[in-house]
Image 1 (cartoon, rainbow, N blue to C red):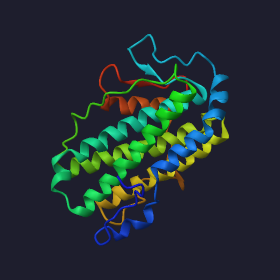
Image 2: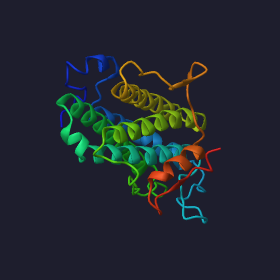
Image 3: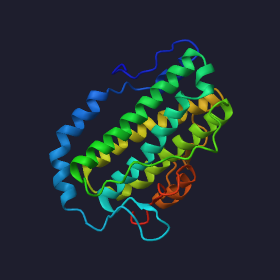
Image 4: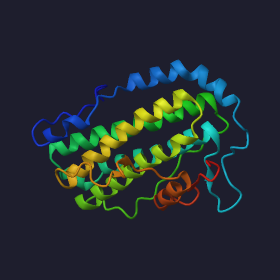
Length: 241
């Protein structure tokens, strides 16, 4: 895979070029390595009550504080990464134009980088508190149908943007807040691009409320995404309050 993940198509997707920013895999992990020592110190002082599961309903609790926010983000990025991996294996992608394939390949790469980044950060700084790998349930999505794939992509991207915006208030470490801001900007570009793939020129539709990007409370997001997670992989974010 090329380190430069900027889309390669130039004709049919020219309208979308301003939405992209090159993302380099090495840059993500160089940043992660540079901050590993600092994050270890920060997380060592976090409350130990952010255990991985709640007694009721067999839900996976993401935890509280900075660890909780990182686990929460990791859960969402796992789901998005798994979704786009399935898109790339589906019939809609197989029959799509080269430009569309390039777009989905690049978004898939971004989401995989995000998921890997959070896994690496949590494994290094809070290995006893990291949530497990989640199992998705995409039975409601027809990966051979354009409308179904784009509708699901819009749902996941919109959810990701509102989730990061809603969780920012619970981040106490400046470095994490900066990282969350960088990642949510990428997710917002994804959301805008998916809208344009659905209907050209609608890239900003429904992304804002009262002039601001939408945000959602962690537990509301958790409840929504649980519809796409198997039993035993559904999450709870009740401690992020």
